[in-house]
Length: 466
Image (cartoon, rainbow, N blue to C red; front, side, top):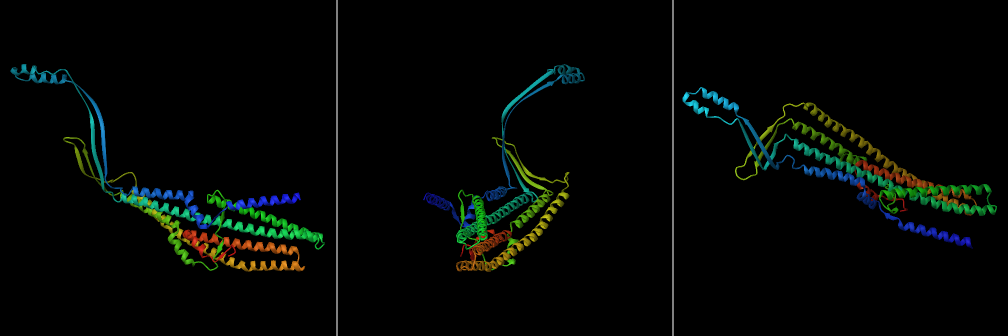
């Protein structure tokens, strides 16, 4: 009586724990999961901060090349001392006086200066002035600077788009990976429950002398193997759930509600995806931005060869008569130690490099898109090919159960049928996961990851029994 009561309490406790865990698991569709990632991803936030930085920089440089007005002020104080030796002057006057007529010599002799003279001047005050400089012609340098910063913004946006596309594929991998692991664990557990019943039946059959000890041991081995596989599948499912929860930054376990899916009909043709990839792939946008930067850098270097024309002016801020100046200036560097022809040749090579990189990127992206498209189509066909195997496994299991009831079959044959059904159903789920992941990779390679949910809604086969 006591063992039965203990077993009842233990079963009740485990049931309550399982119910508690089920209550804490949050059901989440793939679309909702992506919203969480998009709003909480540090990678996306960092990429967006880079885009915002370049946008603000571009806005800040819109007025580059306009007039610059400055106010300047200085407080000053000075003391000036001057000490003059006048002896040479007196000697000179004496010599001149000797050459004068006698009537004037007496007058000249009276013209004598002190031998030394000291002068001191000190003052203090404040000087204020307004000045301006207005570049009238810069040879296109200011336009090149603004264009270069704008191209940097395009590059930052391409990087941010690439980050978003990669995160969608990563979420697909972990979200539907958790679905696959959970489904595999459920299949293994269901098979274990059936095999456990068959194993218990062999104990009674051995006692009744209906089977040999070898058959009993074979059933026991099959049960232990099924238990090991179920435990491993459950561990894999728990690890996949942890990975998904951490991806979503969720403190509680997440239960994916969007099932694995397959579209039994082919998706759009290869030409459609190739066209979209060459128009929307972030990698191509980044290459184009690099090319624009190289072109703007070349234009800026060429602009430095041209004369620079500017207007200038300055006016003192004081009452009365104030000093002022205004005019137009021109600077033209005719020679310096930098070889500008070499710099121009270097920037032209950068433009050439960017153009060649673009051609290579187009070839690589086209090849990647075709590879991913073929992988999707292959997974679709493979999924369709698994249906007869599942139907056969279910029929064999039905026949084995009937044979065991009629006494024409063995428990081991029934166990093998159970294991085989789990195997083919798990393989079918794995192919569906391969299809989903291949589809996500295809969309990423085309810059179409944001359309993944539309393909989910178009699926005509799901792995939740519908």
